[in-house]
Image (cartoon, rainbow, N blue to C red; front, side, top):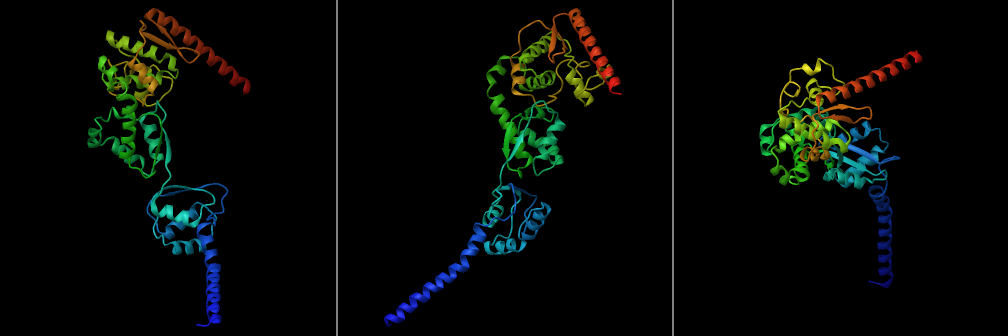
Length: 349
C-alpha cells in the first residue's frame, strides 16, 4: 500500500469517526443529559402497578407534566426499558431520560415519611397509615384483626392499638400492612418492652395493663409534668378498689372526644369506667413515651380526685368534699366563659 493510500485511509477513518460522533453526541446528550420535563420543582410519581410505556405516558398526562412525547418514546426504545415497577418516586426537575427509565425499570423507590402522633384513636390511626401507603384501610383493618398475624406478634385485637408506637418512620410506599405493623411493633419493643422490663417485673401490672393506663393518661393531659400525678391518682383508686371514673374512657365509649353530658356517663360500654371497675379491656389510644413512663412510675401521693382547671391542667384532691368544692369552682368558671361568649355573639349581631 502506498503512503498516499495509507493517508487516505486514515483520513477516511477519522472522517467516519467524526461523522459518527456528530450523530451520536446529540443522541447521547438527549438520553443522558437533556431534562425530560419542563418543571420548576421536583416531580413526584406514584405507580399503582407495573406499567408499560403507554401506561407511563398516561400517568404523566394525568399529572399534567410538560414533556416531548416523541422524544420520550424514542428514548424508551433506545434504552430498552419496557416495563416500570410500582412504587413512589421523586425526581429532580432536571432528571434525564436515562435516569427516569432506569429508576422506574429497576424499581428504585424513594421512601415516604410516616409521622404517627400519640393519643390517636384506632380510626384515626387506620386512616393516617392507610392514606400513606398503596394498601387501603380495609387491608389494614383486616391485618389488625388477623388472629394468626397477631398471634405471631403476641398481641390481641384489643391491645394492638397501644403498640402503634408514635414516631417518625421511613417506609417504601409499596410496603404491605404486615410489614408496616411489624416495624411499628418492633419499634415499640425497642423503646418500651425491652427498656422497662425490669420495672415491669417489679410491679403488679402487666405490660398490657400499663399501656391501657397510659392511653387514658394520654387523653387526660397534654402536660407531661402532671402525668405522673394523674398516674398516681389512678393507682390509688385501683389499690382501693374504686372505679377509675376516667372521662377519656367515656369519650371512647361514645365515640367522640368532646365535653361529656350527664347521659354520657350512663352509656353501657365495657370501656366506661364510671360503670365498670378496674381498667378497661384495652388501650383507647397509642400513648406517648411520657405517658407510658408516668404509668410505670406514678407519683406517690394521696390524691383520689381531680377536676379540670382554667389553665388547661387539673386540680387534685384527697377527699371527696374538697373535690366537690373545686368542681364547683370549675363550673362557675365555665359558666362565666359561656356568658362572655354569649355577650360577644350578641354584640356581633
